[in-house]
Image 1 (spheres, rainbow, N blue to C red):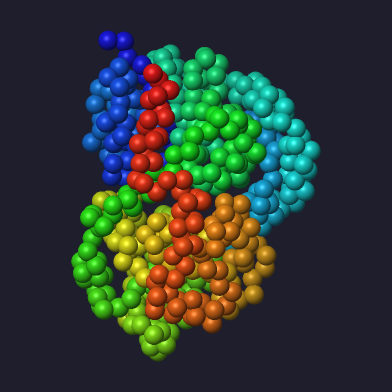
Image 2 (spheres, rainbow, N blue to C red):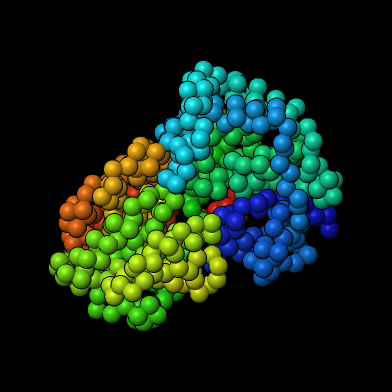
Length: 461
């Protein structure tokens, strides 16, 4: 039997975490794969992916190690700078003038380029022909090395699924496909990728997670609306029917040695973006110890578990280690099934979630948990590039704020009042949480992964 080959790019650990949830995209690929189709995973981290994909591996599910090529020529870097700033959104403005991380110089030391970036977007970026025709044509000439051509000769794919379309090498894989007349499907692996930078090469079809992203694909990236498919967030499929799978309250509280009678306040750290979380945590712990809340409570902290920030996180929390009302969940949900269980249990059994402008706000809404966002800098007076308030201007999170689901607090007393109200009545703002789900999740039915697989395989029929 003649087999069709589907390439699936897998150069981001974020993607594999999103795709390998129980009953996720990889499982759906195995279940729904037509008999005449083989799947070839392209990755630069074979050992990592082999360990995660071992349950799916077969003659029809192949992992191909690829050396990721990063062009270093000056003209290439200059061209990438130019086309990236053909859009200039609230997110781009923050990154260009202030920067996302509070521990780095403003805009990574390149703040002086903000005017040029804005000028590019407000001149050539306003001309659709430039985005749709000129940039792809130049891209094909500038990226002339064709480092992945040998893969196309080896496997002769019928279709390419670029799972993280905003980055190289996905752009080069799509360009190579275009040169050969091979159909392509792209996906933005994170909810801020379409509003951050212009993506020079469009796929034939684009998969997005929600309606705001589809609007961004059309208005910012030059896609036709009919070429953009809505699927939902595959990593959130696990929340559908979670009641039958989640760790019990008794087991979860016992694991962390938390009194089961206590209400649980969960604090999701965003330490790379905020420098004053210790002030917030100390105040909440003090309120608990002083019994200021109407209900007995405990505080669970979810540290920022990105590896490069681990040492700083440990240093920040050193003074809280022996605090009797504060507990820490250091497990990274993607590292093991047990860690995932404890992460889900943490959100499921939370009574209030406090978050620093992250997708946790969506996860909390899916579990009907009230969410508070910190909109102040503790006791410090931070400069613009370090204040947490700069994050409110990020394009993607503005959609969350606009739903009214997340309560944005501006000071300690406002924070206390919000926590206390939710501890007494967790059903407060329930309708707003439903509004957020409708606006930002497309369908919270647990079938996003299935829709992705259906979209991919229908293109091969």
